[in-house]
Length: 278
Image 1 (cartoon, one colour):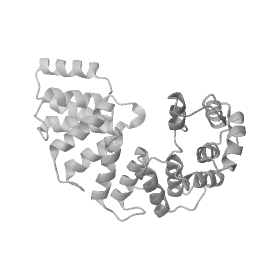
Image 2 (cartoon, rainbow, N blue to C red; image 1 turned 45 degrees about the vertical axis):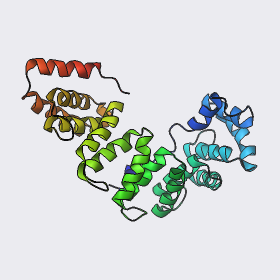
Image 3 (spheres, rainbow, N blue to C red; image 1 turned 45 degrees about the horizontal axis):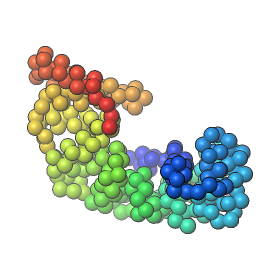
Image 4 (spheres, rainbow, N blue to C red; image 1 turned 60 degrees about the horizontal axis):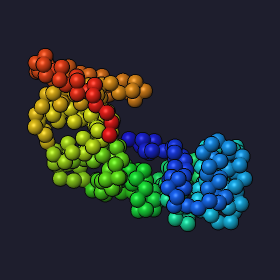
């Protein structure tokens, strides 16, 4: 695997954390809040007009906002170099989302020379502030040794921090590490626990892994009904997420079905139909 496998988009939810703070009443009314509201409704011209003087005056959140606008080409021409400039200004003031995005851009070589060491440095700063996406990325690069020495124990540590915040991908990765004994003592019960957390949120890979554990009785009591249910859910994943995984889950489901009674299969199908992500 390579850096490309990391979460490498420029904050899909954009100003989610800042906007949530406004809605919760933790931030007062003002130009920044007005700019965020304008951005949220797609009025990028107004957002830019409000953010720019704030950013030039040193407001880290507005600097982050300008970085996002330049990075995504919203309200002005897309310019990765300008995005890096504004993210850096905000990141140096401790703005965690800007630190994360700066790590992304160094990792991808967008607007700055590709530098995995710098990417890791900025991911760490955001991760230490509790940003789950940065914790996940930092864990991943420790697992592959890109920009940092390969260290599975350190990878497991950061995956756990993200997983404890409910990060589905980190939960799945932590389940895999416990299952293989990579960076942590091998513990199938722990593996099943983390796979279940991810599977409950809809992670198809975790659902397939959990089905396998129920099918073999590894880390959980052997239960073909549960195995069939989780395989069925994994096999019904969105086609855009990959045919190979769906086909594997379908094959696993058919194998375990050969060991079940019609009543058990019907029960498993009912459980799969009634399942809703948590």
